Amino acid sequence: MELFGRARQQPLAALGLALLLTFVVCAVFAPWLAPQDPAQLDLTGRLVGPSGAHWFGTDELGRDILSRTLYGARISLVVAVSVVGLSLALGLVAGCVAGFYGGWIDTVLNVYVTNAFLALPGILLAIAFVAFLGPGLGNLILALAISGWVGYARLVRAQVMAVKDKEFVEAARALGASDVRILVRHVLPNIVQPLIVQAAIGMAGAVLAEATLSFLGLGIPPPAASWGSMLNDARSHLFDSPHLVVFPAMAVMLCVLSFNFIGDALRDYMDPRTRLSAGL
Image (tube, one colour):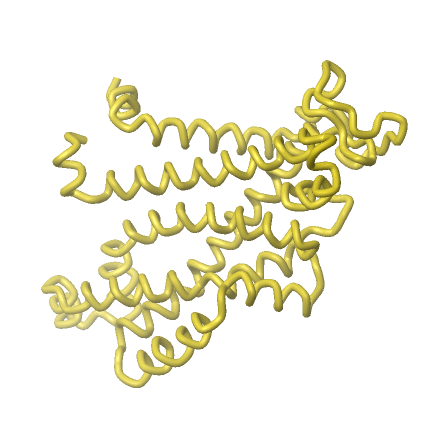
């Protein structure tokens, strides 16, 4: 009953969770849910509109769009989780070191290194990285993580600097606890809440970035199904076969919305002031 009560109080959060669960189910069970092989060609059935045989229609090579959309969810979710996990790990290490020790270490990491990465737009840095190493899932994840760790590092640094001088940290230091123990046992548990919110919103950005790079031909190489590459293939048939654009674009939009709704709900739930005003 409590769960349904919270769902009524935060309907967008419930909608975001339902959408995300739908995409997870589609990604995990894509081989069983897809009506056809996403790479199967049928040149006699090119550009067929939505019908009983092909619910989302077919593309210019006769491939089933529903099957390719389901398999595209796999790539988008794998990229989102991997990019956020790797970016968060890099940012956590850099932010903890810079915020906890300060001094010249903080100057080097926060002033020089992070500003150097922030001087270039993240998507341009990712494009340059993928163009240099070549397209592929691993290179795509690494490129997006390298361009996205800076935001997590700055957030962690600010949170660590706010916590490291608290009484419980000073007490642990007075009892002889090592720096690693203080960071792991006392600092990190008190800064995890904003990191969770940032990670949820960061996954939405990772889905968009993956679709952008795939649209530019720098993502997953064909014949793998990706929402961005599907949109790229549909450019020349925008007006005569709009279904080629509608379904992958809707998938990207709904996936990004689900992460944004969940991130907003987590932010409201973890903020005590918002919880009290909303009665959560």
